[in-house]
Length: 304
Image 1 (tube, rainbow, N blue to C red):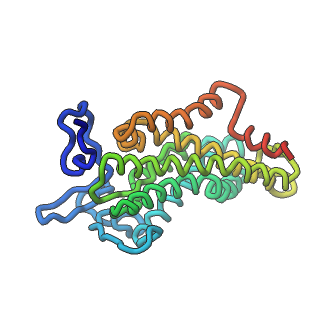
Image 2: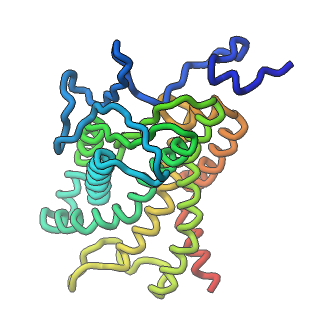
Image 3: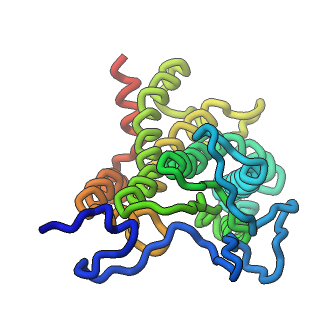
């Protein structure tokens, strides 16, 4: 007789193939039973950048799913700001870009790049985490985003030095009892948001190109002799929108460490593999052929 899946709430299946124990909540419980989140690498310190508290007892919210505490809003603001700065530094090639662009052009391009990247890539990160949050709260869990100060500092530093973005801005912390299936649903919610944003970006981006009256930027840089090249900025916003959602979706579906893929695979290997391939196939084509995700946007625009 098959084991009732509801029994997983109480105990793991002793006959299930050995797998690493999976936790979504990065927390520790003291002798009094209080749960403390510890995302800071500075022992003994509860205050981080901008006076943000990185160790906070979870408080259940019984209102709307779309609810954000003041503490969570501060963490989201901090993570989004650092992520935007890192993306802007990537766009100008980090500090090495100073030799190519010159100090003035480098600074102005950085300033122009940050709002472009915020519009293009910000939703891929923020809405991904909100997807986790809403699904967790749907299953009755406490769920709030917490930034990782060490990950933010390292990510900005790597972008400044190497001109590439490799950052762990933070994650949605979840406290509560869920089944393996529900944990898989919480985990896959984020990548599914990225997939949705990728699909939505194709017709919206194509419509914007139609309004611009062009299917390619007139120049690759943001600065031109008589001002700045807004068409190139819009093109980059569309291109980074579709590509960033593919990359973030693929990265998070990898079955390692704290990534979503490990939790999804633990719930259902078939669903995990299907989701992984949905992101991996276009990224593989992008890397190995002249094709790029932006080609889908251009092809859509050319239909009209």
